[in-house]
Image (tube, rainbow, N blue to C red; front, side):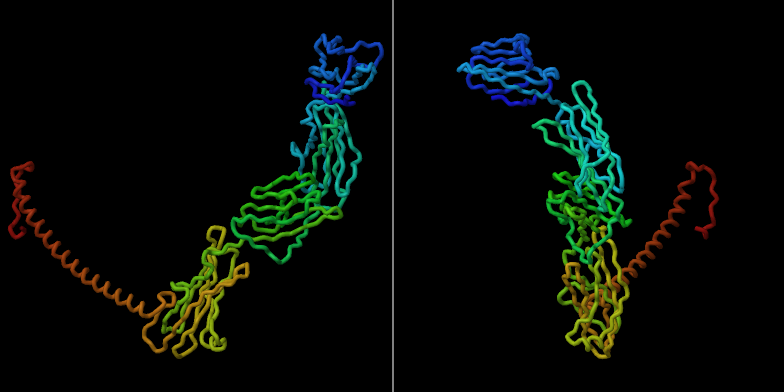
Length: 510
């Protein structure tokens, strides 16, 4: 049979569906009053009635009534009388409700603009107006707060009719009533239609209560360009707000998520999971810092802190020693008791320390053989993502006899991995030659290079002498040529353009 309530869109054809099984006659009335004429009839499949004649109404074969181009005047109660094949009569009342612009039925809160949720920072109290405009039927608005849940008092609500549509406005004072950092306020819109679901706007009001840092000493390191996820709470939380500590020791909001999975990302480079965890898509130096997630667990507000930094290791994690070209067998031969060694490491983050130490199976022997003193420890920023590290030491061989000592330059990375490079100093007492420990590792190579250099210097000296002789000869030839040219010029000028007598110079001047 028929439904007792039918909902139809304003301006469209609306069917009052009944699905009558078997009947002889059907009578439709737009009123329940007696002695009124039916608007549509069907007797043995023959249609009639003044509504059928005007085209305002129509009947389907199963006895359902169709209201064409429904207007507000068509809204209301309809009465149906059916005479069955057994001559029994049944009656039924059906109420037609028209709706319009249900897509606009989502409420809007003026302080949130067109967003379905918003967060207002550092606001103890706030006046907010919630509205649903130009809809049908009229919407009912209500305000309440969460944590704890309660209806708001002192609400001002008005309804305005504009033609066939209605607008509803509800104003509330959002007042912090708890000592929490955040408090949730919700404006809910309800339209009395079975096909309409309650709609709402959520306002998160942030209190002026400062966040007290509770960061543990443990810092988590992540690699450059890595995607990381910081945990916050479970899916049961009514809200989760992520904030990051700034250089001014204040906390800036990054993102938030509220009941129903609504969220907002306020800064680029971040994402949120359904459970409120924060995702950093491509971790870099500018993402380093202290993060906190504030969420509720029904009974109280919970703070979850994270301290993260970027770790970048060089392709070769071993420290380099200047002058060493073989990391496994690096030995400097020298007859000097003092010298310098420089250790360096390129492209590392965070800032690490290069440490020099003496390597020996007998610590007592090593400490009495060589003495180390730091001369310079420095670092330079490479590309704002990593550092270049340098550590120069001055060593002193304390032994008067020939000896060989080994030094190590090491580094410990944030992941507690240890790397070291060893260099040997082969000290030979009583010899004339020496080798700089910042240069070639052995004396033979140094001697060969020296002999080659002397040969080059000798060849250059011979070449220079030959060049000077050639310059002297060339100058003499040029001088004689210019003297002969002056004599020929004087002969050429006689009787030419300069046609005037020339005074001949004495022969001794030629």
